[in-house]
Image (cartoon, rainbow, N blue to C red; front, top):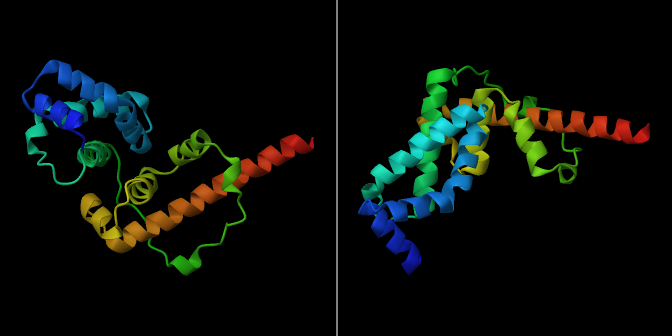
Length: 185
């Protein structure tokens, strides 16, 4: 952490509004994007983001400087998003399947898709798949940690990730086929 950033954190711990606003401006887009990865509705994601950022500002004394401050904020955003999902959806409904039962869809050229297209496809996943996928791929959690966070088994976490990847590849392939049909016409 740089001296300037440490100074901002110190001022935020002293509840100084200018520092709080600066911290908000520095991280609002990045933290809102985290909420949007978990929550389909932009209105719900915005509500979660506001609640989570309020929690960051009121609990900033709990940050002890161990690890990155950004990582600490990300965890709060993720946890608030997960709490919302637990209340609104059933994250626990899955079918556990062995990895060997999943077909290989590696013939999709992922370089042809933009970030927004891929994020749009992720929005089409069921809540449980999307949540596990986000935690594993974007937040770098291990299956054991995901299982604990969501109250599911490690095998359920693994199978949801496998099924999420399979569904993403299917949707990418479908989109790729549609694009090629358009250009052939």
